[in-house]
Amino acid sequence: MKRSTPIAPATAPARGGNAGAAGKYWRAVQARDARWDGKFVLAVLSTRIYCRPSCPARRPLRRNAVFYARPEDAERNGFRACRRCRPKEAPGAAALVERAARHLAERGEEGLKLGALATALHSSPGALRRAFLTMTGLTPRAFADAVRTARFKKELRGGGNVAAALYETGYGSASRAYERSNAKLGMTPAVYRRGGAGMHIRYAIADCALGKVLVGATERGVSTVYLGDAEKALAAELRKEYPRAELVPADASFSRWVREIVGRIAGQPPRLDLPLDVQATAFQRRVWQELQRIPFGATRTYSQIARALGKRQAVRAVARACATNPVSIVVPCHRVIREDGSLAGYRWGLARKERLLERERDAAGR
Image (cartoon, rainbow, N blue to C red):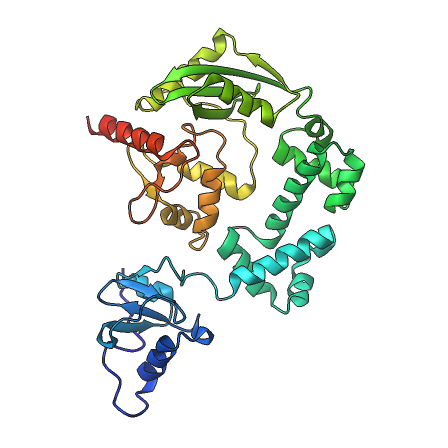
């Protein structure tokens, strides 16, 4: 990889006067001047970390300070991003996305034209799109669609009729709601409002190396894998998601899938290519597919997953997609860790995550 040249070297500024670019950058760093955020980054030789000028962290010695025009330049020279000030995120991106989200929530489909939305927020279409991709990993339209679908589901679960839910969540027509919700709910809005009435979900609860595992599936494939300690709690979790669906104990034909998942929990490499039936946004699906590409016995960081998707800034969005994975083990979200090697969060507990990784490493090393 080609290294980048600093825009100002690690030398002390001249006494009693302007030391050129280095002097300007150093004064901005000392003042924690946010107006310089996005114009350069401060790289610290002693820690190999780079920050934005306004970072609240302790200032380094001047001789240890090097300045680069872009985060990518610092990274090409072996520096890593500060976790406190997150210098790779666009300045003001979080505030801009928050304002945009409120605007979209208030206006429904009328607020989806990117140019009009940017004008209303005193921004530009390009800046708004970059801010959304940085903070959420989604375009403004995809973000608005995901938020609206979540609100639509909430309205339906609250017992309201479909027409009222359409109005409350800003869908422009019934056809749009049915078209989009079929992709994200896996059923029509009316069926979802009835808590999955009419759906047929087979499930089984088995003993495994981590306690108990619940495996649920529709006629199309595995849709649920829960880990826990008690059968009643696992069954209650499934019932909470689909309170009126027909939940039936699985027959013998289901046992191959259950044995496959129990074996993977015990540290065995995959033997069957399990079909999946999961509902997701386009971004979630891309993340989950990338997780399935992680080799058995290996791990990846959230940043590596984001880079593999071509969205280097979407680290937090990747983490959220991992946290909402409904089919743990089959989609191995336990193989994603932090940059420093720590395990980060896991819905079923860090102890289970650690044991899963240990078993896979041991099996892969045989």
